[in-house]
Amino acid sequence: MNMATDTVTELAARLDSAEQDRIETNSLADDIDIDVDAAYAIQEELVARRCARGENLVGVKLGFTSRAKMAQMGVSEVIVGRLTDAMEVADGESVDLSRFIHPKIEPEIAYRISADIDFDGPVPDIAAYVDAVAPAMEIIDSRYRDFRFTYTDVVADNTSAAAYVIGRWRPLQDVSNRAVRLSTSGTVVEGSTNAVLDDPANAVRELLEIARRRRIPLRAGYVVLAGAATTATPLTTGSVECEVEGLGTVSLRGI
Ligand code: OOG
Image (cartoon, rainbow, N blue to C red; front, side, top):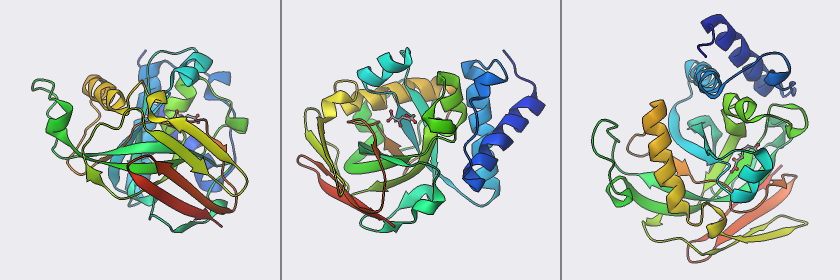
């Protein structure tokens, strides 16, 4: 389906206003049929609006990389969203929760891209384009009411991306099978990096394939969030810390 440009613009504007006004909106699918290509076109337009306000693209994020979440959504393909510099929170810093509608937080592994990726060349080995890994957390904040959305809805909504924090970068290494712990004031959620496609490096491989197919640019210095290693936890005031075995901790404080 080639959705009319006016419709893409209108739906992107609807999601953009929901984000800016912090007022949740209904599933787009309630009003209109959207396929995956149209959903990525809406996402691109949504992100273009942010860039027109002065934000810069600094990376990408993956979602639905856990088998449980894929099964829950009835899908088999991971989703890709874009990260801008306005979404970045410095390690240990405070984040004002009034920026969000109903934020949740997830522990993640971040990878750093070391070279611009040429989609027309041969598929490079991960070590040829990624040079570092770090513990990270992502704040997701669906612009849809009660986080209720279809697969195409969430792609259009930039995969619920809202904010992220990255810990200390370490040289690229095998981070499969590492224990992950997310601690908030009231809860501790534990998991393993293997929840992310059996090894978070597989998420980076899938990203490359999807980015090539959908022409999503991947540039030197970009951050890649490989997807949640546990279920998402509601983000409330107080400190949140994520520890990844062998990579250390990363934290932020909701205020
Ligand atoms: C969609 C984003 C999910 C992940 O890591 O699976 C995601 C959502 O659940 O709102 O980022």
